[in-house]
Structure formats: C-alpha cells, structure tokens
Length: 435
Image (cartoon, rainbow, N blue to C red):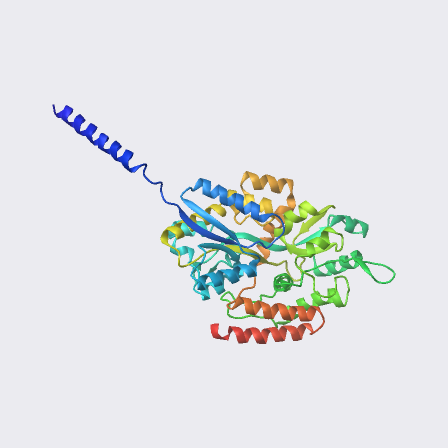
C-alpha cells in the first residue's frame, strides 16, 4: 500500500507539473549575456570577415554569450571612441587597442586588470603562456592589463627580382646598416634626367607611426627610448641622434629613399608596383604581400648596427569598467577563445600577425603553414631581439611630439640633433607630473 501510495502521489505531482506547463508555456531559455567588442581595422585585407567568422564560432561554442562587434576605424579612432564612450556611460566590455595605450587607459581609470578576474595559478599559467616580449607592453605595476592578440614586429621585405637585376644575391637580405645603404644605392634606378623609377628603400615616416619604425633603428644602435614605468624618455642620447641621422641620410645625402614623408598606407602599394625594392613595415602586412606581390619576395629581420632589434607592435585585448560581473566573465571567456592556440594560429595565417604564444606555433595548422611558407616564422624568430614598443603616460601627446620632430628632421626642417633635443624638452614637460 505504501508503494502504491507513493506512486499515486508521484503521478499526481507529474500531472500537476504537466498541467502547469500547458498553462504557462515552456520555461524561458537561459538569458544571453551581451558584450560589445570594439575592433580597429588598421591593416589591409578583409580583416572584418575574418573577425566576424571567429566571433561566430565563439558564439556557436558559447550560446549564452552574444558579441556585438563594432568596427571602430584605425587605432587612433578606436582609442578616441573608447574614451568618448566611457565618458558617455556606454563603454564596451572588451576592445582591441594598441598595446601602447595601456598607460593611457590606466590613467583614465578605464580598464580592469585581468588578475582581478582570472586569479591564482590559473591566471599565472595563462599570462605566462604568451611570448614574454609581448607581455612587456601588457603588464605594469605587478598586474596584467592587456592580453596580446594582433601583435607584430617591424620586418624588412625585399624584391628578389629587383635584387637579381641589380647584380645582388636575390636570396640575401641586408644584414647591417652599411649593407642596407649599399644595397639601396645599387637598387635605386634613375634616368638621365635624375628621375627615379625605383627607390632602394622605403621606411614609412608619415602618419601616426614614424616613432615605431624609428624605434627599430634606435634599438639596433643600442638605445632604449623610455623607462618601463613610462615616466621618462631618452630622445636626445647620442645613440638616438646617430640613428636618426642614418635615416635622414638615406633620403637627403645618399638619395636612395624618397624625399618628403613616406606614407604608411602607400608603402606596400609602392612595393607591389616596383617603386621600391626594399620596405620596412609590419609583419601584419605579410599576408597582404603574399597575396599581391607579383614577383618573388623575401622577408628578413631588420638589419643590425650594434645589435639586431625591433619594437613589438600591434593590439591587445582590454577589459573595461562599468561592466556587470556576468559581462566581465563573458568577456574573459571571449578573450581566452580568441587568443587560444588554435585561434591565434588561424589569425596568424589569415593576416600575417604573429601567433601570440609558442603553443600557437605547435598547432598542426600553423606548423604546416610555416613549413610551406617560411617567411611566416621570421617575426617570431625576431622576438628574441625585440623590445617593448614605445609607450608612456600621456602617450598620445608624447608620441605626437616625438613623431612631429622626427618628421621635421626627415624633411630637412631641423637637424637630427635639434629635433631630438626639442622632442626631449617637450616630453619632459608633459611627463613631469607622472615622475
């Protein structure tokens, strides 16, 4: 009887639950957490399609999270939009911004350190999985503020057909400053009237990034342009002046590079069209070059003076304040997905940016790609010589002062020494309150 009574009670309860379901309808699905994601479109190629596909795969694997991807223009546009959105109370939960924006975002009290959300051994293990060179622009004050995503170095590209035509070994890139000057002299083509149809070398000097290309030269001459705390700069040191003088001489004295300012965005186009035989640009242009160069080309580490050297570059993932705990958790999950070895390998193959962890290069996809296309390993191998990209507090104004004075020297308006002396004085003034 007791067993029968229990069965009757269970049947009645089940009937009541079924009736309630008929009356109330199906229970609601678990609510989605929505996060907004700002992403800069800063290099050539259909990067939005690649990001869209990665976001779609994340959402498929995490149906409880909805990612609203907002393409925010170039890097400078992105940081401006982020800071404006913060002041307006509509900040994103996650964004890719320059690794060098770390100090600015900290000073604006805009971002959350990852250590607050991924704690203990799990956090330490995750942070240490990335290449140490990339973490130099991601950590400060004992905390991790950025996670590397589209990271790069400056590399040298050369046109092998142009080298062969000039009597140079097409398989050998210039390994030193002297070699680059000598090679560029042989590669520059002039007609009887002195008009140039092919320059020996182009190093972009226009736009927002002259400091980045110049940092490669300064590092190769043994100079470090800022302290790790981002409070002091060393623009007017003799080694820095010598590096700028070398760059100026390529244009004004040796006449193997174009006069005036060489624009960042047009340099790859000049390379494709045979207007320059050597160019310096980001490894993030590697896939663009592979797809558009109609001649055999090579990729090499930057040439050395006292040492090899390059700054790292590119963007990190940042997490923003004024997000709910659910949004923060979803944003961390999204960043972990996007920087996982498999996705980092996918991103590297699609764009040319460096797989941000050794584990990315151990994936079958990227290891096979490197085996079939060895230039994809050059930037990774150059990381052993890399330094942190130039970054300070009040970074936008300091880099503008620096870039304006570099451009003044390159156009002959100021001497290299005077330009760097002026840049040092103004940077000291801007950074005084942070010291």
